[in-house]
Length: 285
Image 1 (cartoon, rainbow, N blue to C red):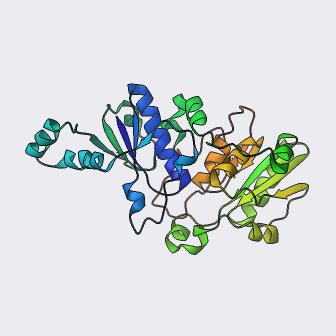
Image 2 (image 1 turned 180 degrees about the vertical axis):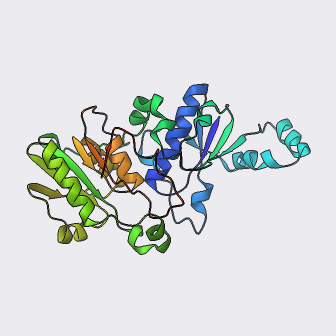
Image 3 (image 1 turned 135 degrees about the vertical axis):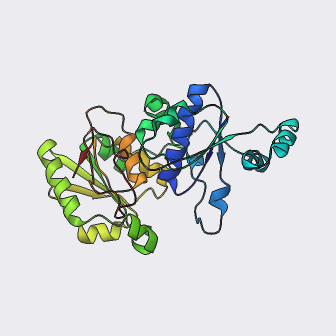
């Protein structure tokens, strides 16, 4: 059994699941999800993976105690073993840089970290993409038809807590309009007759502040995050923000011909090293 502690919003939870799922496939075992951290008053997050067809179940409360006892006394471990509570090895993420030792972790692990690198689950990529199909597919609406019938380029603009939350603003921060202008110019040189589809948690700001030459659609519906990811993934190319949600919108597009433009500077804070967060085949601006 591989247990993943879920932390953060949808994009973060997807990374945590993907790493656990890949490790579970290696061992031919199951994935359990510990959502107790999301219930903490300061977390202000909800379990979001239920929107997908994932191969995992939420762990029961008594399974949390199995994990907590792994660092307790030998006597308590023996008691839990006698009660059918196997010990789980706690694996803490050391940094944002990919750790190859993760790939050799044994079965019966409890994973604590964000695991924000494709390298943790690349070998199971096809399975992960299948797992992240929405439980309810979006309707064949005007936006989905326009995406399918054009050289669609998704543009994701993350604001929300990057603006309102002082910690998020300090660690990550919003991208400048210059970044989007440079990415737009580069994409125009590579894609003929592009149709830009703008996704954001602040579409009103995007309408007022972003200008792109050529056909542009500001996507306001659907409001469900999983459905927005599905629409983003249906685009042929992508301009992403420094956001895990944005990252997944591009990664779920399995086309080997896609162009993905990502920011060179993912974090404002020098305390985080994002060298392995963006795949090498993506273009950084």
